[in-house]
Image (cartoon, rainbow, N blue to C red; front, side):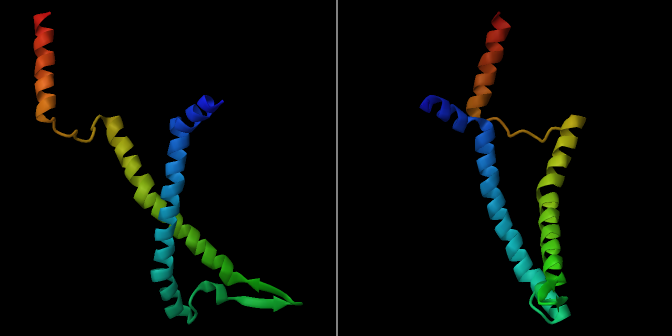
Length: 128
């Protein structure tokens, strides 16, 4: 039973998913800082309020409506989506496009040990 659980945990998909969740949480904090440090002050300068949640509020028969809350979350979503696209999706698409065209990124240069092993391999092939 524990062996099966260990295999499940060590599978690439689970590890990749865990890494994605951690990176996503960290990235979310960056976007939140961008919104709080740049966007909200711009909104405050334009509308005179610290964020859009206070804009467009009204009450009908005791029910409170907030257009600003919807706008604030929409702006937050758009910034998260734009950041993910420009920082993650677009560079990966460019890399995949290069691979399809056969333009692999330049590989690292071989170390001295790797060069010697390559020479030994080639010499052994030549003897056969």
